[in-house]
Length: 246
Image (tube, rainbow, N blue to C red; front, top):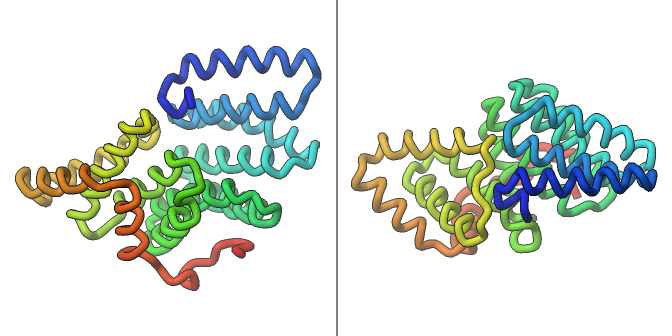
């Protein structure tokens, strides 16, 4: 949880120490694990070049060892690196490949993460209906079993594309409270989009109505935020093709 809590320097130092040990032992799986961790740190900080460097090596190891979880999580980060570079077509292709891989091998947590990734990519590409479908499904599958920071990410991304401004504010407020309780801040590479949504909502609603909506959302329990999404934003699964969906 060191990385999730935003302590990137300490997390990187621990990974580098582990890397030296794994390389000395010739443990390629261990090396790949560390590379994926370093890629997560680079991703959270918005460093696409470092993500590509770490995940390129991890991907080669994952394929050589025929380890789908290594291969898949390397591809997921490469998809997000492509998204950071505004190459939505490449990002979507990588996400589709990874989602199909995780479905095939029954890696449920990976499926949830890729649904959230695919939602972010579709949103950036302007395919908002598709983005909502992916994100709603990611939240549905991720609650309550998946890591809560990942469910929070899906809910924040939904808040960014909601047409209902009041509920968008409430949802962002609920996630801010939830993240504060978990000690898991929004990672730097996602902050700008969330902040832009909040600023636009404040302008649209006016200070008084915005503040009221924020107070209401901040009082929501996480389960209530999930319920709002699943009840009000659920989309027929036939609207969007999810590769190899089960």
